[in-house]
Length: 306
Image (cartoon, rainbow, N blue to C red; front, side, top):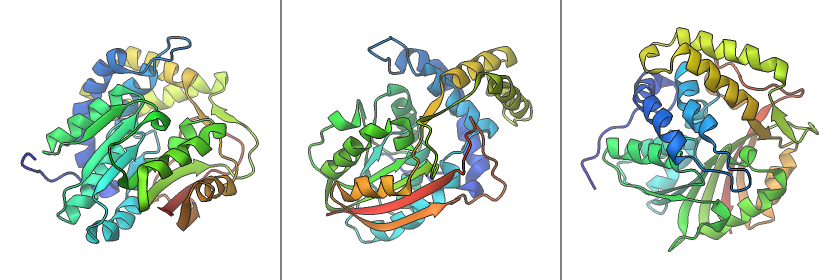
């Protein structure tokens, strides 16, 4: 292990330091996405429209990110790490290094060094995770591929996920839960935050065509006021990237709290904590993205593998 360096706080209190890191990684993601992003074997389309822009959207502050849920993970991780029995960690899906930063911070607070593996089907966020880890002296393992096909040499003590189920069709959620259970040792812990829309019948959230110009304008105004404007794409390129993002971006709707709890209980988990509601630490946070009729909330779940 290289010499370890202190990572920034991953919550709102560390936003300035994290934005400085984002300013460094924005050009990396922009460069890496066209060559590294996953391509759909059915149509050849890649997810570069997403990973090429996500760091920008974080930096200008127009997306809900892990910053607002960092405290949930840190508080849940602290007693587990202190026990000395939860060192081997699987991060299940990652848009970038956001969740990785939280896990490393929690272990640093406990003066412990984790073994971390990050799994995602796309190589671009995995490159960003390796970049982040190396910057602070950590070595991590990464695996590009579908979680349900991932196999490890031994089981994990912890699985951490954030918003993964919104990126997966609801009919495949049981497969994800089964994979988490299979990758955890008995007594291992799953930590998960995910949004949901109780009672909403829609299958997906998409930008309506008439919403796209307004979203482009919102991103452009946020970019114009960004303290790190110099690292952002030109106004013309940002406008094109934002349009592509809005055209392609969709999220799968979870319309029931019971859906989340039932799939976990059906696949070998005991629920230790299941909280629902706003769960946003930052009182100044403003939601963004495509809108849907219905109340949005978050689920925070801590579950033990039986």
